[in-house]
Image (cartoon, rainbow, N blue to C red; front, side, top):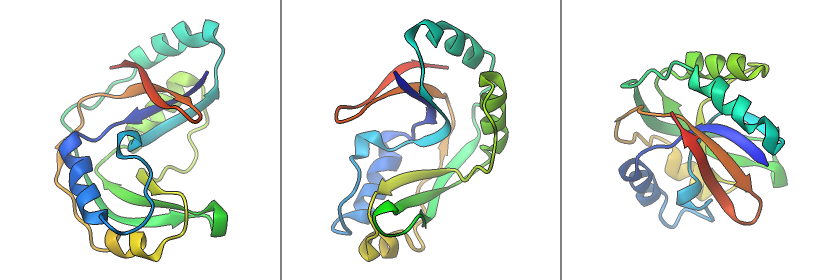
Amino acid sequence: MRLFVAVYPPDEVSRDLRRRLTGAGRLTPIERWHVTLAFLGEVDAERLPAVEQALGLVTVPKGTELRLRGGGRFGRGRSTVLWAGVDGELGQLHRDVCERLGLPDGEFTPHLTVAYRDDPGVSLALDGYVGPPWSLDEIALVRSDPGEGYTTVRSW
């Protein structure tokens, strides 16, 4: 199974961003909007209990204030990812998750992917965007099923 660890913004935060992006271009489905803390890739089912146990040891800084702000892009052409930036301290949480899972904790740019193609309308709509604040309350282990979507396996 393909797994990642994520923070999901509350529905009202996602809806506020969605309103800002109305008519801006082809977006990823709002129900998939999340901030990836760590990507595990393919994990055998028998390793799942160990992954869950490791994530249970992560200190989630509940109450940390987060906010979507502005945006940016990764890649070029057909490989472009357009994203909304995330204000708030997630770096230590990212490092803790990676350490517990034995993953490298390379460069981390907290973001929420909104589109997978270069679209000036989306970029323009993200420019200057400041979303409502929210408090971090949990992290989630998420399974990605290509063509079907995401399923939360467990949250802490």
